[in-house]
Image 1 (cartoon, rainbow, N blue to C red):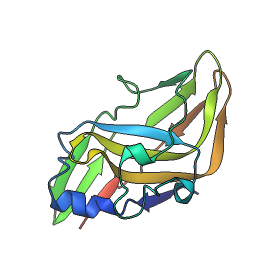
Image 2 (spheres, rainbow, N blue to C red):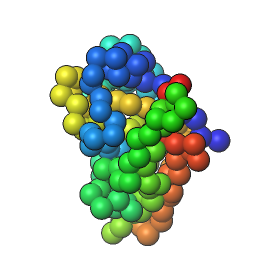
Image 3 (cartoon, rainbow, N blue to C red):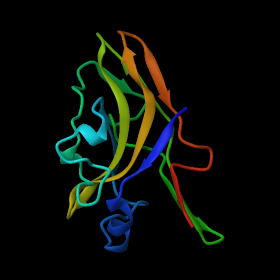
Image 4 (cartoon, rainbow, N blue to C red):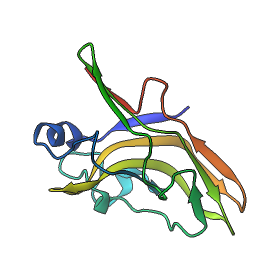
Length: 150
């Protein structure tokens, strides 16, 4: 089962206008390092930036997105006092060789400048993914969206 992990700084970042989720460039970052094992746990207060994530090497990485790692098809909708953020699902493929193992998929705001590359959420695949050449994995966002705020 896949688990979504809240980034502690996200709520404050929303309140302080760090994110415009409907217009900013949202991107994926892959890691195989347990957040609590990072030098500064990116899920805890004051650490919610990409610089606190140990990313994998993206050698041999391709995906179903037009610009690699940049989410596409973003919808940002408020209806009935509930805000929903969604995007197209992503298929990651090892092309020309294996991709470094990963377990954690971060979504971050590449447009954010203060703080730079603010994290939005973490998806824990709950098992390490090893992709040999020509192998793929699909990251399918929840049917109700990547996130909802009510």
